Amino acid sequence: FRRFQDMTLTHLQGIAENYNISYNIDARFHHISDQQRSLTEAFNASSDMTQQELNGVKFWLKKVQKKTKKLDLKISALEGAMAERNKQIIKENKAQDVAMANFTTTLSNQKRIIYQLVKDKGELQKGMEVFRESVESQGRKIAELEKQLQNMQHMQQNEILAASALIVPEINRTPEEKLPEPPQNDPGPITIQQRLLKLKTKHNQRKKFHEEQLMLIPSKNIMEPMAAQHICNVHSMLVFPNSSTENYATFTKGLREPLHELSICSWVKTNASYLGTILSYATEDNDNKLVLHGRNGATYDAFHFVIGDPAFRELPLVPLIDGKWHHICFIWSSIQGKYWFYVDRRLTSTGSRFQKGYEIPPGGSLVLGQEQDTLGGGFDSSEAFVGNLAGFAMWNRALSPGEVSGIATGKGLPRGTILTLADDPLIHGAVERVDCTCLEHCP
Image 1 (spheres, rainbow, N blue to C red):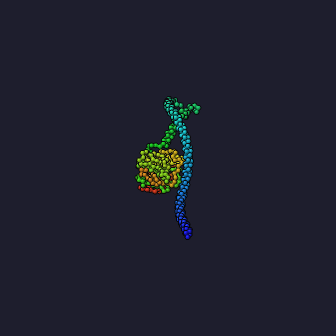
Image 2: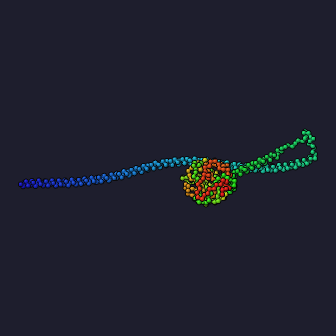
């Protein structure tokens, strides 16, 4: 029994040990399961975070790629612009070199011409001295010949008086007995008279040529205004009573074709101390494509003829501000690069190298009486025209001097006008339109 008891106790102790081992295994298994669950959750959380980070990296990678493409495009555009700019610079440098070479050649030619003119002037002065000495010598010879002629006339009178008592009737003589008749022509005096006539003719020709040359030189003296009572074909007149920026006229017709030449003529009368703006033509890219304007308070006696700002020429203001009617014509040729300014049929200013090859585009805003600083506006009262404009007309070609003279003398407008007051400009502010066929009827 004791042995059985020992064996049973031993068996029970083994069973207890096995139970403890099994319990420990279950506890460990549960512990391992908990750890696996924690690891799985941590792995899942780590996977989610990693996926989010990967998505963020992909998003920023796409943005970086887009920016890289934009930068590549900008770099390509800049490279193209730089290449084009380099080509343009090379082209401009070549053009400048050609222009400089042409300028040098022209300058050399001008120097040679000036040298030749100086040389010719010296020779002309020498020739004039010789001519003067010759004239003086001829004058002395003429005086001596006149004295000789007077002496011969006195001697002939004395001979006639002495022979009057011994006259034999000529009727009774035969032809053989008649005395030889004196020659009909005296070569001496007639040759001298012919020389005097030639000298006078040459002198008159030189005097006339000198007067014609003086007519082409701009004069600073006040010119006499033309007689208004003899001028007709004026048609109508615009009156600008004051310098308000509300006073102006516009042409809805405008310029429909580009201009390479132009002529603008009008009768002008103003009592102001400045001329103001007669016409201004503006486009979206340049508000001074074509301007004829002066300014109140200017320190110089001139106004500006602008073709494509900043290119302009200063024109003489006198005698346009004497309160009388004056006829003016502005003419420009892009083909020749020249301009002409006429006042009362007289050429008062001209010049070259003025916007040669330039084109005045169509589609802009054309205003009479105000200077535009913006398209159709931006007026300044100090640049406003105050006075009367009559017979305003515009051509797309350069008028000849004869055509300018014909307009100024009332013979009518030449062919090819593109704008006149007959096109019914829109009147703004206090501007008035007056119909007057002749200038004497225009107040």
